[in-house]
Length: 154
Image (cartoon, rainbow, N blue to C red; front, side):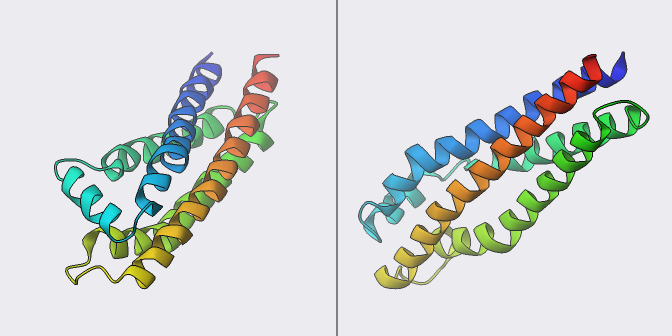
């Protein structure tokens, strides 16, 4: 009984990741890219109290822990392969986030230097395109978890 409940919670956490990632890709990224560096100056002023990082730094580890817990509890049940793949892809998504996205976000939002249009514009565009890639990866994770949950429920 615990495995389907954990899998459902993991699925919910991944759905929150998917939604947050696509929101950034569809709503935030075009605004960041609109008029660099001016658009980033405005975004820096707006994102003073909290940023998307506050959301993702809670939801991503939660999704990983819930997926790992489901994998452990359901180790001898059907759907284990789906859970292993989903967990592995969540780790890949975080590796991409830390190695690709964070350096570009640092250029966009944390640089103490004046914003140089060409350099920060390139970083902003790369971050936006990378967000689409990460979004597709998270959809694959979601669908893999759905398939695993269906196998667990049988």
